[in-house]
Length: 249
Image (cartoon, rainbow, N blue to C red; front, side, top):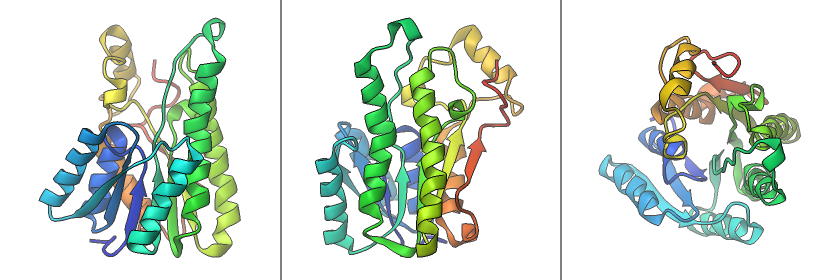
């Protein structure tokens, strides 16, 4: 129970990696705020799972690309808990397009949530974060090894890694640590169907551990980074990819 008594916000936590991290933080003793944008039933299911395991969680709706929503989310956290110890920035979106099909709408949709959303959440979180607080940004191995047709999404994740280091420098004197996790090929609702057939076989062949990741493979690293075990770790971008180097195909 290394996170006992801690308060955590996990954005985009109704499913996938966010849900896995939320459950793991709760299992380690944290009270977890499950943020969701539209999947209320899924968010309620995560809360129910945590509570059934004896943990504490609640769900709060907010579009993390909307400044007003983000302010409301953290105002609710302040009113209900008075403090915050952990922020996991996970809410994101991916639109894969070849350059000739690129639209401005898709560009802004991804940058508004994947980058601006992380900054808006960090802006509000630092008003509440304790002097030993931890911000964990979920990035991707695509930040350094882009897929075909992933130019914008990969650029957003590259930005996440850069802002992670910048915020670590800015917030370090206040005792707040900032790190990013770069998941590899991970089975989630968002990737359902993306790894099928020959492409999926090539990805597995390029992964030394010879399988796709699961949210449960990513979550323990988030627990570590949120805990005092990582008290000397900040400004780092840590891969959780099964050993993939390059895109794995």
